[in-house]
Image (cartoon, rainbow, N blue to C red; front, side, top):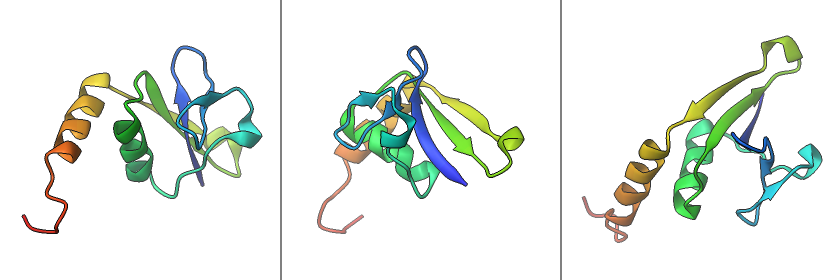
Length: 86
């Protein structure tokens, strides 16, 4: 399975520089959906959906991510201690 981020309005794919690319080959691939969401939150990306691609393309699916969720995740990340303490 390949996990990608896609802009919901333009259908462009997330690129490693934090921008968007229309080129699927240049799209940034993620190991997990969690990593994809952290990428969005850390870069302030909104209007995204997670695209799950499978060898059998009939199984491909997308999950839209609410902008509110990404804002809350970004806020949580900003308030997390960096020294490993809780």
